[in-house]
Amino acid sequence: MHQHSLSPRQYVILGLVAICAPLGDSCLSRGMTAMPPISVAHPGALIAAVFTPWIALGIALLIGFFASYLTALSWADLTFVLPATAFGYVIIALLAKFWLHESISLERWAGILLITLGVGFVAQGPSRTEHPAPPVNEPERKDPDVKEPPAKRPDVQEPPAKDPGVKEPGIREPEAKEMEA
Amino acid sequence: MTPAVWIAAAMIATVVLASTTGEVFTAAAMKSIGDLDVIRERAGLGGAIRAVLTCPLFFVGVFFLAIAFFSLLFALNHLNLSLAGPATASLTLVTNAIAGKFFLKENVDRRRWAAAVLVCVGVYLLAH
Image (cartoon, rainbow over all chains, first blue to last red; front, side, top):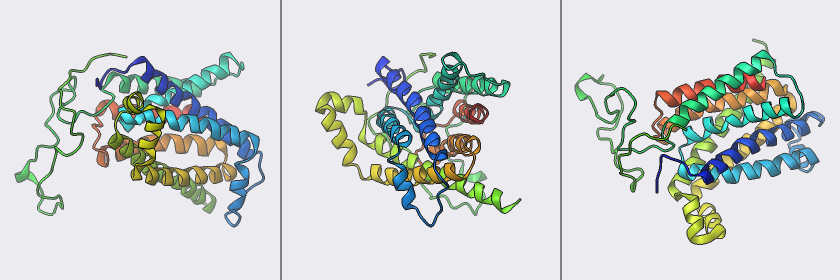
């Protein structure tokens, strides 16, 4: 199992996560704004809202999103999947421009640029934390798990011994960073 | 600040907290299960679904995600979409980076912090 480079199928799954989430959200908000205000006293109205068409479509899209999201989380970190799939907002905005001919304000172009930059940042790195292997292209840092006992304040409430070896048992191969996506 | 602002902030904070908690539990569940694509090749789609549905952590995650979902519906019904949507989506990115580092022990290096912050501001600008 190769952790760092993603297979084409894994890119498809990340793409589905990216597209389904904003589309589903737009359907939900479209459905909810069309409804009369719901008060805290009648939460049952929220359940009834589930069966209106836009909200039902939104939920169907979000179920598709959730299945692909779970799959992605099974082979990648949460802090990789979330920023990477925010690219969906960019895709939706560009679709709205070129397909629906909506105009994109300067503010939105700035948003598109920032998201693209952010996605570029995570995509360069590993998709999954390999606990023994430090990131290769970072300037040499101290291993965060190494304790520096003398300098500590006496009142810190840390447990005396950390156990760096418990999580992710099977993965040990120190892999070099590769694959500039 | 006026009470309306506090109420809006409380609604957004509820969504953000619930969804961060839900996502951390879900991610922990999926990490403990292992690569779903591999499981599906070995045991079929049914096997993959069974692997997910027999993981208790998954249901803890879904419980909090459901709370987040209904509080988002509630917030969307009361607040402007151009506030509630981007605010919850973008704040969740940053809270998840923090939670991912401390609870999931993910390696949130400077690259990922930068990504979380850039995407957070970007989502806000784009969806606003």
